[in-house]
Length: 285
Length: 298
Image (cartoon, rainbow over all chains, first blue to last red; front, side, top):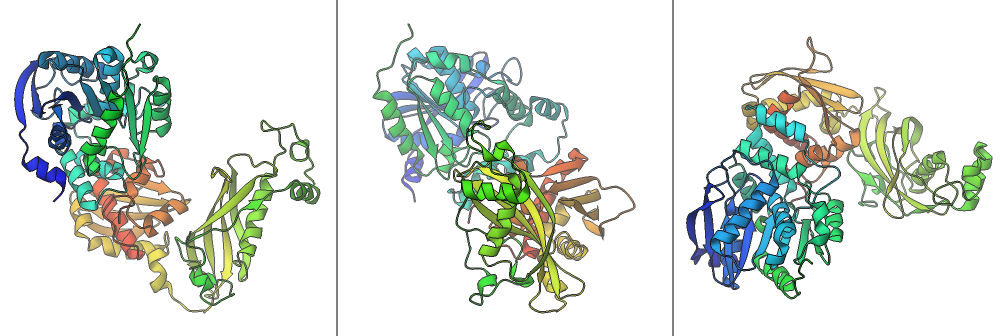
């Protein structure tokens, strides 16, 4: 049994429904200390952090894991499925304020990573730092095709959706991940609402905060898995180069979901957060 | 790669026969440098003495450009140097792309993958399809091509049945595949509500499978009606997919190694069926039963 499993069995997590930006939202918390806001990927929910929050809480953090509007146990956003990641960023700001999180770290993956970068641009001076995984600030060649995604939204019977999510997840999990773990991740990713996921992906394909990257006022670390077929390392590198003093970590044998794929992820995240925290946050002039 | 462990070298010093070029095998070797002297000699031999190849200052890099056909010619030199040409009777059907420039002084490596093997009707020789990737010292692809060779067989025997598993895209192969698919629960279940024809295109050659409610009604190269969709890729993509360590079809599809013509909707609908089809084609080729669609994972 792994250390994380043991910690998970002792988990003293608590959960609440909170009214955030007009949405009745499910928010899980565990631990006390510096707040860490953990943001999930497109179409998924906070369960992706189930191994991370107990282990991270044990290392002395207040871990906050929400389900974004329309995901998991949160009700949909008042305006329907969200297609603009800036709307999720605004929702996160409201969540930070409602919970009174003092200079939190923000950690996200995929659209969660992109939302974390939005937050760094919007209120970096009020954050301790950002870890953006499997994400970039924008791309000259956005993928997937927005036209194809819009077609998929209209075509309610878009065929083999669940199979494609399952097989597509297996294809972007890293080579280092044991087969049984990859199978579990892919099987759980089938639990998505196609309308929400596809809208998330439109948000992913169209988001662009590149103009704001040079003025980010908190330390940032970008993380990308070598086996991630969704993200071009060149786009991540360009984002890292545009952010003052940003760090870039490439994970060998890992794909698009580091927090689900890596055994001992919380320990690695703790190290990254420590390095971010060592640096004096700069204020915007 | 696995150079040196091939059946072709089973007898020390012996050049490989037709039977030794097994589909999916890859051959590599040490780098080859194109010196100014070699390029000057090629300019004389070919008559292409253009300044681009003989004087500095005509390229973005400044150095003269190696003749594209020298890269191709040197592949045959490499093939001979590696001891692979001893039983080659002829070469034909050669297609070559000049992907990026090779400059005088650059070193390149050749990587040859066997993509097809078909014994001739005389049984005494057979045609080997090869894919060749040429990379420079930085690992960048500079040339890529395909070329076939007629190679003498060690034994003139009719072994079509034993060879059917890697004889794609021959009629014998698609018949053997149809037999396996009919017995595959994953495939018959996934196509249980389907009525149509699936085409599989290997380079320029397409084979068809007529499917009705989980049964294969017919297979071959012609049908009364057009295929519902055709899934196509280069020979080398199929060879690697069907003989590689795992079924990584989804990864290759995500990397745009496959193209689809006809009904894209029905192609998506058969996502699970095509994964099962690749599993069966891999089993037929004697490839390991990889965790479906998971890439690179043992």
